[in-house]
Length: 136
Image (cartoon, rainbow, N blue to C red; front, side, top):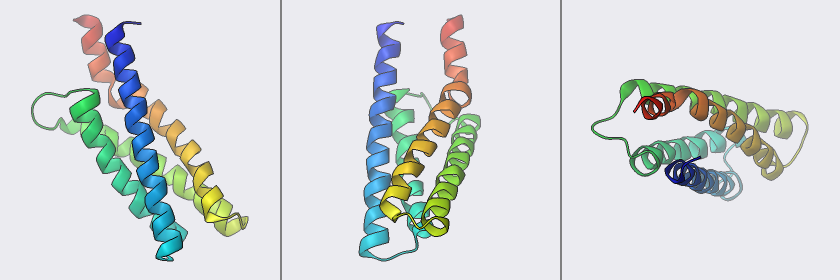
């Protein structure tokens, strides 16, 4: 693997860590400080992290040129929607159905969402960039 590809992977991991931190911290503030229902806190925190993720990955990690690439954006939102669904189902299932604290339900949901997000990003969202690099 080339150095440039390793750098992108490191940036992607750093962006993911930052966004997970934003998601988790905002969720805790909304759920514990403002007493929002876990599903609503999760919706707000996850959406905030997704917006930040797209911007950072597009401008810093992958340094996309020009204006927004709509097919890429739609794929990104789709993957994150699926990831959000998996995250929310996990939070609801663990917290509301099994009585696990919102904190631990969120920890588990992060692991599920990160797995879905990585696989979708790696094999679908940014596929055009990979195929262009291989042919170029």
